[in-house]
Length: 288
Image 1: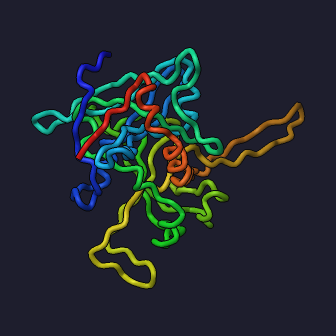
Image 2: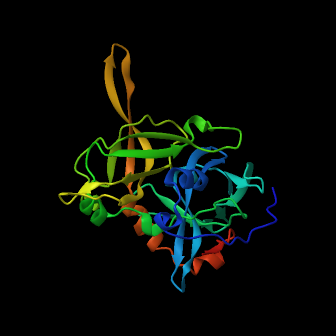
């Protein structure tokens, strides 16, 4: 597939200022990743350009194993492109992830998270979410995010799509573990939803109006952000001693394991914007 139109100019703004619905924005920003030996989910965020803050670089974020499992140099990103009549057209975008010198993406040194700058055609992601909206320890503490707090997640379980346009499937659940902080120590938390092959790399996020924290009910306020990324299903493995050998029985707990977004932030912050010009998939500057 040949992408003919790569330059895009779009809004890069705070969701509250833009009046956008976070679920809708995340639907547009989330893609299916396929390749030889791999199936996963990814999502696009905008890393602000330090030399021109209104602009941002398209940044693909996913689970590292969604890229490392691919046996070829290319993966395909399934997105949608908005048409003049407000409909959406299915679009597949080939992305090079390796060359003769090695991997073109960057992996976090500690956890299963990967990121890379990419190019996107016009009208694929119509509202770009900033990497400043990644939830860190300060926000977790300030907003008193706690076990039982409701979250949303997007993904492609077993590669399934929500419709013929190829949008992801939205599901929700609650934080199912404690403590959450410090994230440098906890690294992950449990999320009460069923994880299947294809969900890895999906964004986990929240949007809450009129929240209560700090002993006050904040009327007219909204809190939101990306709190983590799905990486695996939590299972229990039983080792059974049989008469003629040993067996293992794996029982899925129908609970997802999510890496804290503080690690995504660390990874993206470590990516030098000068790398944009070196990447075969040049990231496009978006401006608002």
